[in-house]
Length: 100
Figure (cartoon, rainbow, N blue to C red):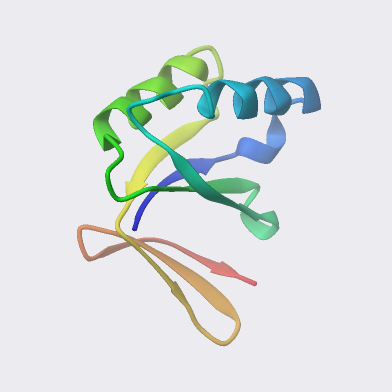
């Protein structure tokens, strides 16, 4: 699976979150399969279908949040769920460890 990690997503307004969900589901070049809110990290992880264009998804997300300096989006290759934490990896390097 392919994922995009959106740091500080929960810090935006409810209306902006609603606009983003409508926006992200409107594309044909990538399809959102699932979304995971990480409360301890104020982030969102979007799971994309295998045939999705990661570049298009990343560009679309970055464009939507271009005026939100605190929002950062990163490709994620793998999510590892351990006993009490979530490990987020990109290119086999740990991006973040979050207690769950």
